[in-house]
Amino acid sequence: MKQGFLWGVAAASYQIEGAAHEGNRGPSIWDTFSHTPGKVLNGDTGDVAIDHYHRIEEDVKLMVELGVNVYRFSIAWPRLFPQNSQSIEQQGVDFYNKLIDTLVAHNIEPVATLYHWDLPQYLEDKGGWASRDIVYAFEHYAKTCTELFGDRVNKWITLNEPWCTSFLGYYLGIHAPGIKNAASAVAAAHHTALAHAYGTRAIKAVAPNAQVGITVNMTNLRTDSDDPETKLNWQLVDANQNRWWIDAFTSGKYPEVLVKEYGVLLSQVFQEGDEKLLKVDNDFLGVNYYCDGFVGKARITDRPMNVHSPYPINRTANMDLPETEFVSRTDFNWPITPEGLGNLVLRINRDWSEIKSILITENGAAFNDGPNEHGEIEDHRRVDYIHSHLESLRHAIDLGAPVDGYFAWSLWDNYEWAEGYSKRFGIVYVDFDTLKRTPKLSFKMYQKYIAQTRLALNS
Ligand code: BGC
Image 1: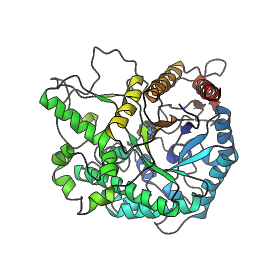
Image 2: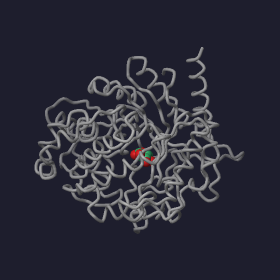
Image 3: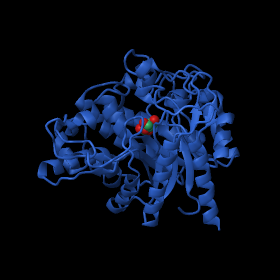
Image 4: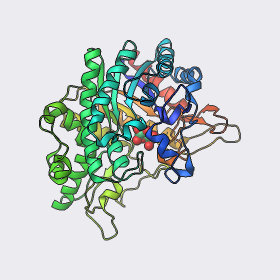
């Protein structure tokens, strides 16, 4: 880790803001989805979330106490453009101005994500990410945000985890908008990649010195078999989750193996000239890493891969980590595999020479520890999780991986999408009844880690 390393925390609008009906905010697909019975655990919605909308001062104070120099937040598209793609809502602008100004006043650099899943409902009604029109709506939105905030925001993330948008949202239907259609999912995968390129160019046109990237959720994908079928399955999953959006902006092409597999699903939305439109220079790659993935030889008990790692291809493989490997798991049942983070960034460095800078834009774990009798939250498992991932990253950086920042997910316990409030990712505990914030032990560990690393770099 070198001087100037970005130490941060991350969050997203719908997961924290609440105030769903204030400031003339319009409905997003997540409002619709979460209010549809049976879609989200316990019927939880983001109507109130953790009420960050009314608690900017208090929340930024926590960041100051933690010692971070960057905060990654997302702008809610339906706060800025509640009714249509043209009329800006000033109250939405005021809210983000207040947040950005408060951060800047405390020497915390704002890193803005333009799209973290809360699509205005009126855009979904016109086809959402499955329709090419969204690309131009996003381009306009990106341009407007840069004009409004670009004097203080210099780092922009166009889209967060377009894989989730496309395949959880339009194929498995477990995220908003809850559609289950292979053609829509592949169309969304193409349109998100295009939107990223259009968005990047729109930002740069307004602010040529801005730094722009996309955040993808990647996994260190392993296999223990090289029989041809398993190898092909591994390549398909890797192409679908790890390579699609990166290959698109670095080369204008999607992984050959997947283009073949998707066939007409892709060719019907991929227009002539799109190769050129997809390719764009970026300043960094944002990587969200939670755990390793695995593709092994199919066993009799295995279910189709598209159930585990949703993509519209019906093949069967073993997607559990090998039984011989002892791994602890988070309360989400995700395996804890810290070496994977280091291996992943080394792989990115090997495979894409165009990527000169990587930001770990999310890393964290769901552990539901609550307060003990003294009101303290001793989340030892999260302490270990974050610490071991940071050490893995440090090692990879020593080996040459160009990682320039790390953002813990998340500062606060918050709304965990289809899981509602049942999964806690925060380093700050939030009592969901009173909304009181209490730093956990992991907050103190991260605070110390940042301070000690800074001290070592300065000495
Ligand atoms: C998303 C976050 C989410 C986290 C934990 C990522 O997929 O960007 O919004 O809360 O992982 O599931």
